[in-house]
Amino acid sequence: MRPFDIITTTACALPLASIDTDQLIPARFMKRSRADGYGQYLLHDMRFDEMGQARPDFPLNAASAAGAEVLVTRRNFGAGSSREAAVYALVDFGFRCVIAPSFGDIFASNAVNNGLLPATVSEADAEEILSLLPSTGAAITIDLRDGLIRLGNRTFSFSVDPIWRTKLLNGWDDLDLTVSLADGITGFEARDAHQRPWAALGTRRA
Image (cartoon, rainbow, N blue to C red; front, side, top):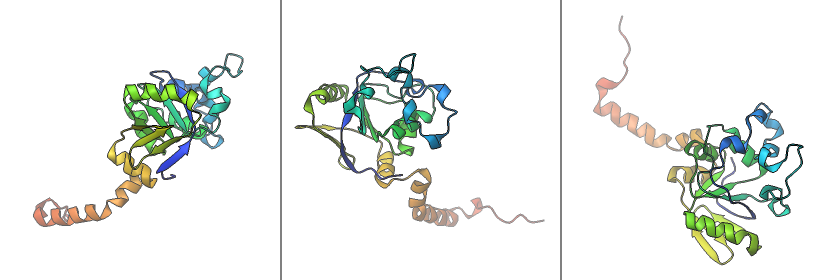
């Protein structure tokens, strides 16, 4: 995965609460090949009408959303089923960070494993960021090392699990994280073998 450190980009405001994974990608699209990209199906039934025409008033269809790498939304984002395809759709659309007051637990874990930062902010800060986005016209900066969001002349703090932060900063998945702890694991095994030799699996005698 691509490491996440500091990005400066544009943001898209989605002022809705409890957007669930079924809305992020409807189930009927999940049989499509990932190689073709899932971005076109992101929030499909909200972005398009029954005739397949883009809804002009939906935020992701606005010209200003083109190229945005940050999505700002409200509480309980990514609730619902555990489908990882919901994260695929966001990443394939181009998002690298979602800012919200809270996230579905499984969604957030899936997000990190695909290089997408779930940045948790207070409800008050989420509302202020949402209110600023249409009027600032300025780029938004996400600083993962310092846990800061900069927008115009305002700075906001966000939180993320420390292990997830390490994984994102290094572009690691769970296997990479485990390999990074190899020396500690080897040391533990040696100490444990010395302290509890009776616990080691020995050769079974006939």
